[in-house]
Image 1 (tube, rainbow, N blue to C red):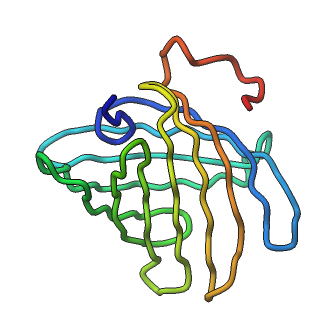
Image 2 (cartoon, helix red, strand yellow):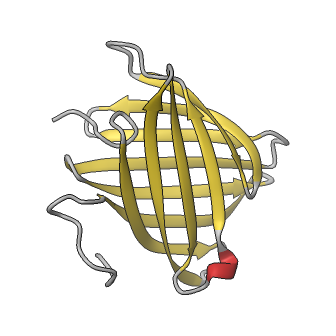
Length: 155
């Protein structure tokens, strides 16, 4: 099975939990829209604490299309938290995204494990100033797929 998230256009919903370095947990939700147009891929996403629109973060990614046979490609992001850049790397059923903010203050590592063509399990960590800031776990589901369910929490 080949990867579908980012590598194919589509809309994805996600929800999960994040835990800050002090152990405080909160739920979050969001959506990502991937487009492949004019020799560049884009990803527009938003996420927020569940039920708290004021906590909304938005990001706009520009992704270099993956060359045939390549295992990695680069991305840049402009979003609520500033500018960042990184790479997507494919390793069998996993897709890693590793990046750093323009000011060097934040580093993020994400691992998305493909469960099916329409479903990924994600784990992430955010390092701020060299120290763990928060961790995240989420389930991503392609919108309109047979695996998409209602707004109730997915495990």
